[in-house]
Length: 616
Image (tube, rainbow, N blue to C red; front, side, top):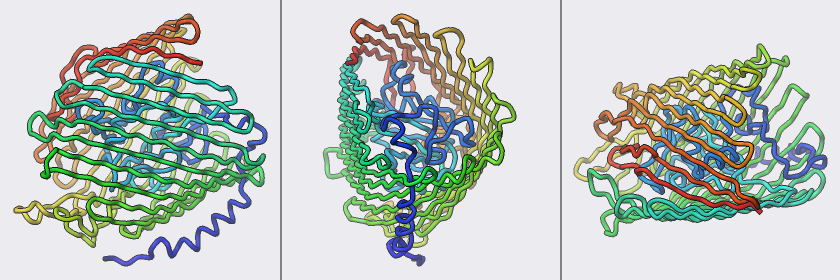
């Protein structure tokens, strides 16, 4: 085993430094504004601080919760599929496992950050969480593309999805909805928020159940979220969030081979945070987090039973120094303690230090740069860096480019083994990547249209691959042997055609291949198109239609073969009644196309859903 300094011994040097910084650090003037005020015109994920999207060099998309609700998009996977460069792959019907491939990176190389805490690692995936996750109780969804390990550490090689639990508001409001539809689907949700000048709160509850289309394919889930925050003093904000999901799913397996079983997945997250300011140019945030993911698969026999539980405690201390109006420095420390159980217990601790600089040397230019060092007890250390440049030659034009590196730490079970199938490999190394992009954002027709185009390329090294060493038992090792490259183009246009009439078009071209064998990477279509048109009347109507097209793809674990492309359409309408009541109707897969996102797992046929929603 390669020697390295364990994280705990280094913590005594860095944590006092972070504490000293925080004593002098401020939060932006809470005393001058409502504690629950939200800035909808900023993005957070690109620099870990609120920043205008007009200047950030990164490729980041912020999804409007209001627009998603109008389009009757209630689940997270459908919402993310709208983003160029993002491929969402669903294993069959609603409730099944789902994966997200950012610019062709593997699903475990895309990181979920929820309320400042990462919820997935290479050890514990988010597949079942995503298969059931809704957007209820959220007020921010961002998709940040490209290597982001400099800001977020391991598993951020492809990009980051940032979710925030809804904040409170000085004006109390509540929303309740009930949905019924095809396949005996029933969904009920309730969300509310409120507060005053110093305190805010939010809460949401959602219950979903469906029988889906195949035999033995029922699914049900319950999710919840809440946030409470208050100004303890004019310069100190204290808050906490709690959210979770509990889901059961009957997995009928592939139509080509028997693999049926039931899954039970639970994920629970709790955070507590303090934000403080001492001067107008310094601010600090200390976040304590606890996350547990518990997953069970059971085929009803002793042949195929699998369970794991991953529990993590997290401490993140972030400090932001605004040296002047054109310079901002972000630095901090992140510590995690992980316990992973799957028949046997394995533990891992990590410590990271990160530093990022944002500079505007002139009004039209923004330059960013960052450096991070991560040290894992079981996976060694890794240093990553990232830089970016944005230039606005005219008010309506932004040119941008970024270059960065990423890594993905192997699991403890890969290094020490997990009987009986995974043998120990003490020489295993983290996966690594290098990626860059260049793009342009253009506003046209006095703000009535925006167009964005990006070329990207990622190179992956030391990718992990399972090699069988005993063909009688199929036991083997995870080894660093693979190399891969992904490259392509992202395009998006949003156009206000007329009063109340808007349209959105998104297209991704992706070329993804294994650089050792030359084979294409599976489940990464070369062409993905997503678009919709929507009309909102000045009275009560909202009408819309959307299409999602996928073409030129391969699938198959051992010998990839071509898989047919497909096109799905959705249609939706809503009508506002008096007393803040709204009736909604939508058709999914309106053309009733038969298709499979994963080979052997049929997607749902045409489905209709009716909802009634009330605000009070």
